[in-house]
Structure formats: structure tokens, C-alpha cells
Length: 86
Image (cartoon, rainbow, N blue to C red; front, side, top):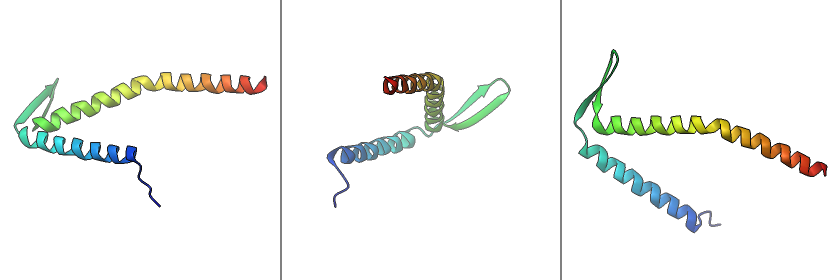
């Protein structure tokens, strides 16, 4: 039984290519950078700081969108219940 379809293979291929690009990016950006925020000082390679910033921004975006998803989900469930009542 074949469990992979063409769409799944493209996702795997995309993930492998993205991983390879991240490895190349990390290898090329090994310069140690210091980030200062108020009294905190954090030193790490540039690639790590940029990837951490991207991850934190993505999480902040998802957390800011979450309430609207929950609100829309409740509204959809209410409308579905109203629809079945008709």
C-alpha cells in the first residue's frame, strides 16, 4: 500500500531544501553578536539570534491571532447548531 502521494512528496522535498538552506545560512553567519536589552546581555552567533527572532515573532503572531480563531470557531459552532435546529 502506497502511503505517499505527490503532495506529500513535495512537502518532504520542500522541508529538505529548507533545512539545507538553514544549514548553509548557519554556517555562513557564525559571527558572535551581542544583544543588549535593558540590563540583559546575550551573546550568540548571528544565525542563532536571527532564527530565534524569527521563531519569537512567529509565536507572537500566532498568539495574537488565536483569540479571533477561537471567536470564529464559537460563531461557526453556534451557526451550525442553529442550522440543525431549522
